[in-house]
Image 1 (spheres, helix red, strand yellow):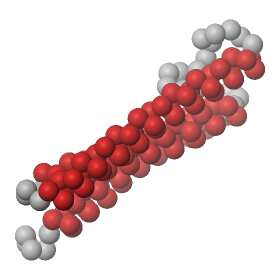
Image 2 (cartoon, helix red, strand yellow; image 1 turned 180 degrees about the vertical axis):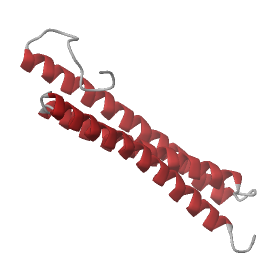
Image 3 (cartoon, helix red, strand yellow; image 1 turned 60 degrees about the horizontal axis):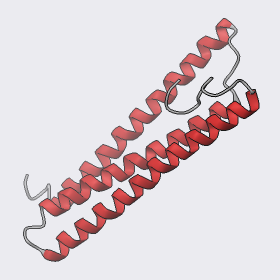
Image 4 (cartoon, rainbow, N blue to C red; image 1 turned 90 degrees about the horizontal axis):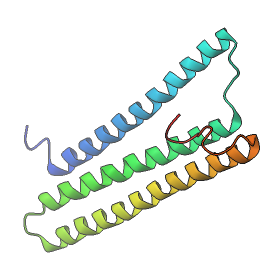
Length: 139
């Protein structure tokens, strides 16, 4: 049994499992949103506005990127822990962690910037003043 589950297979299965869990969690919120749209249509509530739709797409894409980068950090941590004193593998793991953290910072900055831009455009278009509604994190 142990020979069947080599280190590489365990790492691969762990990464695949984490990515699948992340995708399922992301799309479960999307399916809940579509269910709410159906209920809204039955009750006569207008459909989703275009800026909100764009904001949701941006948020989903950035969330998926964040999940991938967190999985990469976990993989690099496992790589570091299983290095067994091999300096090349430790260096490789450190490089993966540094690059993934830089990517994660970029994704978080893009998330904040897109939230700011979309809410600012919404405020400018609706002319309803600051803080009326946001299509980003809090609704």
